[in-house]
Amino acid sequence: MRRRDLLIRLGLVAGGVGGAWWLRDHVLWREPAIVFPADGSSGWMTYAEPRAATPTVEVTISGQRVRALIDSGAQYSVIDRSLVATLGLTHRFNIPMVAYGVGGEAQVGRGTTLDVAVGAMRLEGLRAAILGLGPLASDDGLAAPLILGQDVLRNLVLELDTTQKRVRFLRREGWTPSRDLAAVEVTRAGKALQASITVEGAEVEAVVDTGASALLAVTRETAEMVGLIDGRERTPGQSIVLGGVVGAETVTVRTLTIGNELHRQASVAIYDNVAVPGFPKALIGMAAFEDRRVVLDLGGPRLFMTRPLEITVGR
Image 1 (tube, one colour):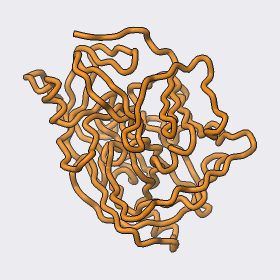
Image 2: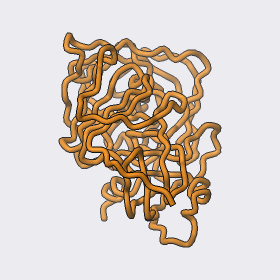
Image 3: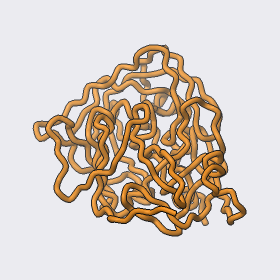
């Protein structure tokens, strides 16, 4: 199996960034101005990498087409150092920050300000951390040197059509869900969406992370807490994380519920514990929304998706 396939099937694709790398900012991080056309929509855009479960789109910066990962688990937007050099960006600001990923390695970075065209929508004055994204930005990974994080997503509505592999952004003001969308109960975890799930009857709070591919990914501590390190078979794999690749394991669980939907014999990824305060113990990835439409409103907080199953699970 090629490494790309293994990452998509087993890994936390962008897990290190999308699964909660934390930028410790020292002053207020100014949000971008979001400019929509009259209809309040960016228009539908096809995934730039349709083989991946995680959503990527082509955007324009300084006249150049760039692939961007849409990452609801990332606290801030990020641009790869090599792209900053390629574009010759000079609008930098000196806010020191430290970024942590699932791999546990820290990076120190600065910031730059971008104007980004995303379909018919524009992000003006987007502040992005300058970091080394490693395989995330290369052809070995997602070839996405830009990450759009919660600083963008909490000010608009994100709609994903995973069947047709397309995405669009919508103005929050005045948006209402269509009748085919059902609400999934969520709360706010920092600036992310969080949902209560059950794993073989044990309840876990998990962050909804469009930058992760696995149905569910948990820290080793959480896996032990819910009884997944019990002698069952564990399959080794790899995950792209902030700046590199780390090992990850998968196990099969008998039952797993997200909202009212039941998954049987589901694969769960396990990554090593990260000693960073507030680091999520579990991540709900894009496999949870396979073959349906899902709408995220981080500012709500609200989450909707089509075709929910009216099934609940207990012991």
